[in-house]
Image 1 (cartoon, rainbow, N blue to C red):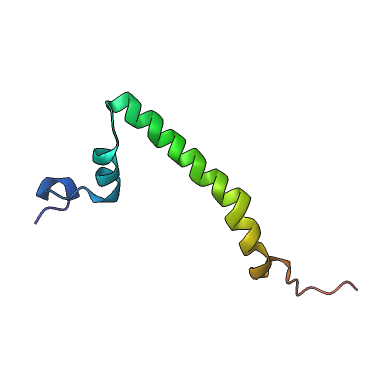
Image 2 (image 1 turned 90 degrees about the vertical axis):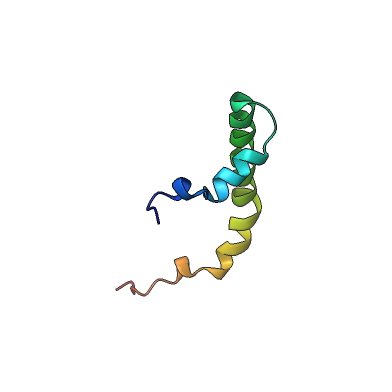
Length: 65
């Protein structure tokens, strides 16, 4: 049993994604960058505004005196 995941044939989720992207390393890197930008855009435009009312960030417990 190895402490390094890729020594025993397992390289995790990111290795699986990398192997399934088309092209050479430069094309894969560009596609990966585009995918990251799209995920960040979707999070900021749709997920975070939807979740914001559900989060207790505006529940202030300090009174003005």
